[in-house]
Length: 350
Ligand SMILES: NC(=O)c1ccc[n+]([C@@H]2O[C@H](COP(=O)([O-])OP(=O)(O)OC[C@H]3O[C@@H](n4cnc5c(N)ncnc54)[C@H](O)[C@@H]3O)[C@@H](O)[C@H]2O)c1
Image 1: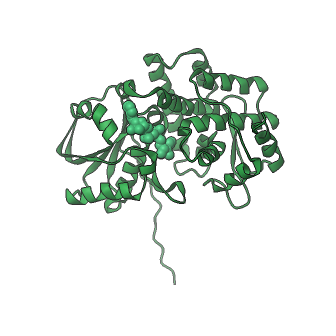
Image 2: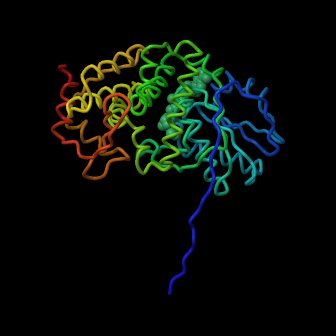
Image 3: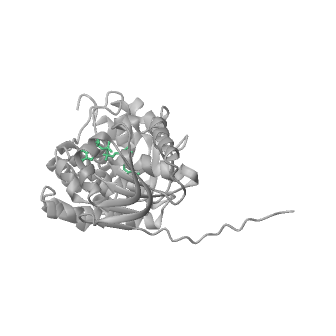
């Protein structure tokens, strides 16, 4: 005997991403803005001139990657229970990628899922983290190992917030913009080469192009069964660098910048990228003071750390290798000797 639950679903979860000054909006429900003290101090007053709700609460959690954990999620959930949030209530993620990931995750599990809106305030979260519905938190086993795919109802990207962003955080966001261009859009890469993102109009155009690129990829592969993994270009190497330096020395985007250089060197060795293309990417990263080199003390140990990557299996490591400028290859068949020969060029004596 067999019982079938017909679960073939056609759900329209489409949502809009607005890149502009936030237009005043009123939500006729309970809303909680999830933020941290730094972002609240800088920008909450501005946000409250734009957003009103039937009942509006502010929930703050500690600032920092190390607080992207269960304790912060519990703080958010307890506050929602105390204020009797129900399934029609809504959350607003107001901060960088850390706040965005945690708010999305809390929204995905509170009463089995409620709506949330992303209001990203760092460049990295505006061009990458707020788009695509990946949410989560970290634990002692590693970064982003717990989470859910839960798409926001809307993303409100207001360039106003970037005026207070420290230069290094700005650079970290640029690294993710470069990532989108190298993997999917040669024309966009050339635009970045020729223009200066410190000009607000140029920056707004670049945010639009990066978001459009990510939106196209997510629309094709929401849950990362294929092409979405290409957005991890630079991350396979970058995660090892973050791990070796205990997440203290480099911002995520900075580690990704070095990781992209390593992936490019691999591409050159595989005959997938020309030397001068790899050089052009390096120059673009340097233009925004991003690091492009790293001293690997022990290449074997660096290589073994690849296996902690979520995309890798017990025996194979998934590498995202650029193909020229504007295309990309996802492969788990890079030979160990080839990768080691790339890593050796980053050794302490280099
Ligand atoms: N979900 C995804 O698809 C995705 C993609 C990329 C990254 N991420 C995650 O995003 C996180 C990194 O995001 P991030 O780089 O935004 O870091 P972050 O959220 O830690 O923000 C960086 C710092 O900038 C501060 N800040 C935020 N807005 C500011 C502003 N307008 N002015 C001044 N300071 C401001 C923050 O309080 C924090 O101290 C990581 O946890 C990463 O895993 C998620």
